[in-house]
Amino acid sequence: EPEVTQTPSHQVTQMGQEVILRCVPISNHLYFYWYRQILGQKVEFLVSFYNNEISEKSEIFDDQFSVERPDGSNFTLKIRSTKLEDSAMYFCASRAGTYGYTFGSGTRLTVV
Amino acid sequence: GEDVEQSLFLSVREGDSSVINCTYTDSSSTYLYWYKQEPGAGLQLLTYIFSNMDMKQDQRLTVLLNKKDKHLSLRIADTQTGDSAIYFCAESLTDSWGKLQFGAGTQVVVTP
Image 1 (cartoon, each protein chain N blue to C red):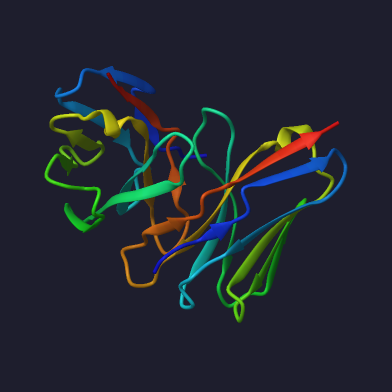
Image 2 (image 1 turned 90 degrees about the horizontal axis):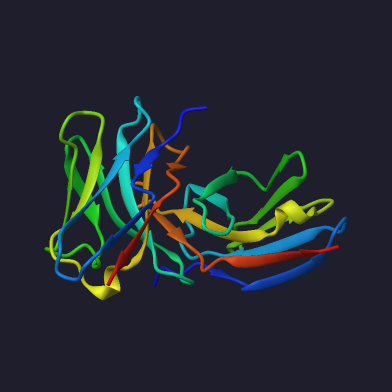
């Protein structure tokens, strides 16, 4: 069964550093998403991406965040200057049509 | 506002049925989902229901939808220890690009 692949599975970074979280969505999917889950809390929407541009973003997705689909297969989330409160599990997801969301297994980001 | 509510904890004995409840807010949600998350793992889609359905059965899983009360439930028959996990209810919001709004999750603990 097709999968959404995320790398790395765990990243530790120092506060103020830039991080790039990588995702390879399912190849025929058109809609791409990033969500995050702070430990013990609910899964929160960050951003959706369609047709090579952001279609919707949440209040969390401020100027420190950016997304890119550089080569037609990868989908990346960049955090420019990480803060302690950015520590969370970040999930990438993709979907083809109306339903059928597929999530990756997540990247655990720890900011120290 | 947009808030999906779930009870936080459920303890069930092995072999019994589990029922996890959820209330959602968007009366025009198109799809409602149940996801399972095991410790340290990603989000596994268990099942979904289209909003024009009242019930959906998939092996041990039964989803009931009451649109009038905006109430969704997931019944797991013959609960096994491998069913111990956090279960998230999510709604697909109609006024967005497929953004999912998640509940806080229900921790299900199955005891022998």
